[in-house]
Image (tube, rainbow, N blue to C red; front, side, top):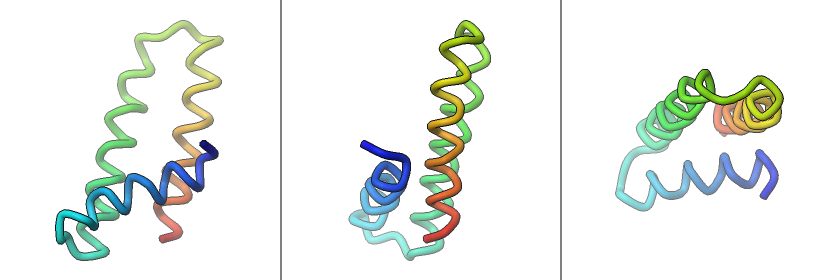
Length: 64
């Protein structure tokens, strides 16, 4: 799943729970921030790959 698709999936999951668009976006961004914080404990090579992916997801959420 590419970052744009993942961003939309996260957004939609919160929206399904009857959040407003802004609330769904904020919740999805919180999830991505949590993922990015946990990447500090992963080896640098793996972190670069995962971090770049999740940063792209975050950018796509912000576009929604």
